[in-house]
Length: 360
Image (cartoon, rainbow, N blue to C red; front, side):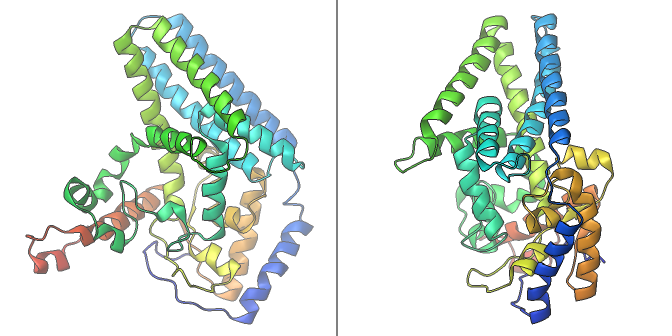
């Protein structure tokens, strides 16, 4: 069964049958071989992405000094996002049996190809998986340009408050800057005065990556066109990344910081799946099966669809809400939620009665 994707605060509920049921579910998933590696699948994905990257740069070389290069920039933004999905799967040990092989492949793909620190991603994403949508614990709901909690929105001042009041409608335009934000935050981690695993390796990879990339752009293209190329690539990358990750949890229940909610309910209640066939699955890098991904983080992408059937039936038996919506509905829920949160940053000169009954 499915429920409407409306935000609500989770109340602690820990019935013994639900708590014990995860081990039963895990045994069933293992019995069906859904946690087994799918090396051939990932080799084929890597091969396709390598060909796509090669085709993009071949097109770049053939086109030369022309504004049609912006089409190549957009294509490159898409390919780099797909590479980021692959690095994400390596970080979850989905590709190889060896932890070291997964970490090295993830680090090379993330830092050397995409331009994002693997160490930064591992720290941030691990904390998110441990406590999704949990106040004070999940870094994905911490205030940034956008506020995801009403208490954060209420603190916004000046231009930040103006943006916050309209943040749902501004969500996708703001994502055009997310690519820059991701690069900046990951670089900030590597230069932080604390221990960072693989710091010098990643700095070397990032330096080589950005040096080669920017060198090619500004050597072969006029300065204005090179900046335009870079801007389009970063904008497409930011929108694609944000549009892939945001629908997974935004607008779903928010868990109190001191919650003792059990693992199974916490992962299911705070996650949203997106319906669709193979195209949606490939476009989202498997993130459309967010519930299953959170329950079994090391499950390879090809097995998520079968796992979804098992998990959904399991939730129906236990009467645990299982949220699954279409692509358009998922984005609608995100925009509606962000606008609703943004009302907490209302202008002090606004009419309270109007704000009370305003609908986002």
